[in-house]
View 1 (spheres, rainbow, N blue to C red):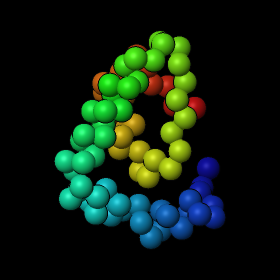
View 2 (view 1 turned 60 degrees about the vertical axis):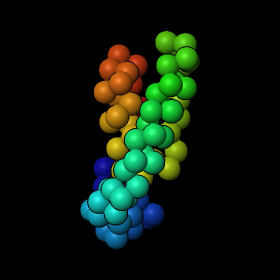
View 3 (view 1 turned 30 degrees about the vertical axis):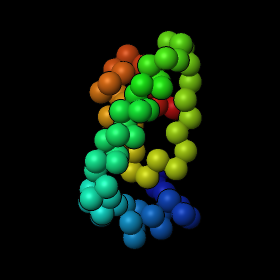
Length: 74
């Protein structure tokens, strides 16, 4: 499905350079990923988490690597 509206605007104007622009915040991002992993590790195995406003989703990749059996995109 082709993105429309705000999704298309983000793809056209921001997506290609978003992660690169955010790379200078890498240490903060890494700490955020670490803390998120600690919090999620205490949830029950069948817990569901909704990720809203995830930018390009790089944190989801990090979480999928940390919890390979527990990430299922919807």
